[in-house]
Length: 165
Image 1 (cartoon, rainbow, N blue to C red):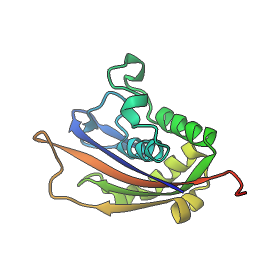
Image 2 (image 1 turned 180 degrees about the horizontal axis):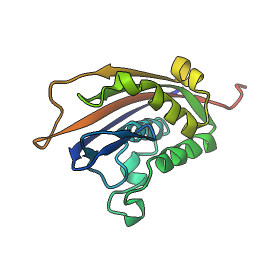
Image 3 (image 1 turned 90 degrees about the horizontal axis):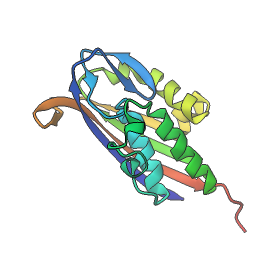
């Protein structure tokens, strides 16, 4: 078994929607980011890459590369999953914390599970029960250089798919 840790934080900026878990969510602001700024997927990618000892999302998808400008973060997750499978691992669990005042995660929790499950090609019921637990935390302030934003933390465990000998 291997364990990885992921973290992501982004500030809010002008706009009317955010992307979380691959799902577009109406909001009073957008996320300021080079890609679509999906903090949920970014922290999951970091957890997977960390468990594989392959660095972090910035190593694989640097924000100074124009190729990733406005890219969907599911591209990053699919690449991390391909790397995981090529090294004969599968997801055992991902434990995620989303820190924000709005949107209210409790109101969109199931949408996030569905979004991540579709990208990972795993049954949402299995992800919810076995692979992912999202805990909702409300914070008075999430500060990113004097502006509001959101943050995520993810721990992930990967199991070898190779038979034991």
